[in-house]
Image 1 (cartoon, helix red, strand yellow):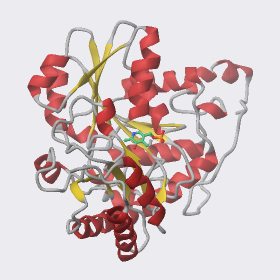
Image 2 (cartoon, helix red, strand yellow):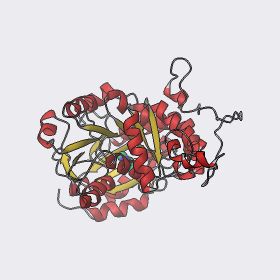
Image 3 (cartoon, rainbow, N blue to C red):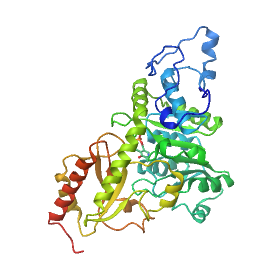
Image 4 (cartoon, protein in one colour):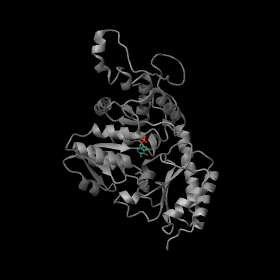
Length: 402
Ligand SMILES: *Cc1c(COP(=O)(O)O)cnc(C)c1O
C-alpha cells in the first residue's frame, strides 16, 4: 500500500487523488487492466505464485493493478491498513462474516440489519451451523443479554436500514472487545466521509460502493476495510476460495465516482434537508425519519460522531391512508422513480414495511412507510414532485377511519 508522504490529506482530497500507477505512466486516472492470466518469468516463480496473493499478482481474479489501486484508496479513506473489493455490498458482508466464524459460532446482528444480509446469515449460513442472534438498540444491557460464549462477531449498522437509528459504535465496540468479539460495521449510509468505523473501534468497515461511491446507479461493488493485516488475510482467503473478484471497468467507474462523491453526498444531504423542512408543513405525514431530526433515535450520537450525513430518509404517512390510496398517489410523481438502491443522481422513492420483519419498532408510528432517496435534481423541483404525490394522496378515496 502507498503510504502518505507527509500528513494525511483531507478525505475529500483522498477521494480525488488515486495512488500513483506502479508502471510510471503519468495520467491523472488509474489505468484499466483486464487479465485472467498473469505470466511468470520462471517455473519457480510460477510454482511460488500463492505467495503473491496478498501483495502481488498471481491470477486476474485475485487482483490487478487497477483493483489494488482502488483498494489502496479505500484503505486510506477509511483509515484502515488494507481494503478488499467484492462484487457487491452483500458479498462484502458475506465475506466479512464467513472470515469471522466457524460452525457453532453465533453472529450478532441488529434487528434493523440490511434485509438481504440478515437473510444470508439467518437462512444460508445457518445451514452450515452458524447461529444468528438479533439484538435491539445499542444499550449495553441489550448487548450483554445477546452475547454468550458462542458469539464471535458483532455486526453494527448505523444508521439502521430503513429506519435510521444511530448507534454508539465506540461504546458497542468496547463492550464487544471486552468479550473477545470482533466488530464489523456496515457504514454505507454515511460513507467514510461522514463516519469512520475503524477510528471508533470497529475491526472491519464495510460499504456498498454501489451507492454514493459509484454514484450513478450503474455499477455494483462492495468494500471491506480492515484494522489489521490478519483479518484482511482471512477475508482475502475467503474471497479467493469463493471465487470473488471485481472487474477493472467497474473499478474505473467507482474510482471516477469517488472523485465527485464529496460534492454529490453534500448536495444530496442538503437537498434532503430542504425537502424534509418543506414536508413538515404537510398534514398527510405522521413522522419523518432521518438521524438529524430532533427526537430521532440516536440523534445525539449522530450530532456527536458524524461529520456528514446522507440524503436518504423515511416518511411515515398518517395511518388513515390505506395502501391502495398510497399506490394510486405514486402515479402523480413526475421526477421521483420507484426503485431500490440509492446514492445515484436520480431521486428514488419506494414503499416499505419495516414493522413486518422487526420486533423493535414500538417507537415507529403505524402508517404507510416510504423511503426517499434524494438525488441531484433541483431541490425545488423535487419538493413540487413530492407535494404532487401528497396532494394526490389527500384526494384519493381510499381513506380508512382515522
Ligand atoms: C445497498 C446496501 C447494501 C448492499 O449493497 P449491494 O452493493 O447492493 O449488494 C448493504 N448495506 C446497506 C446499508 C445498503 O444500503
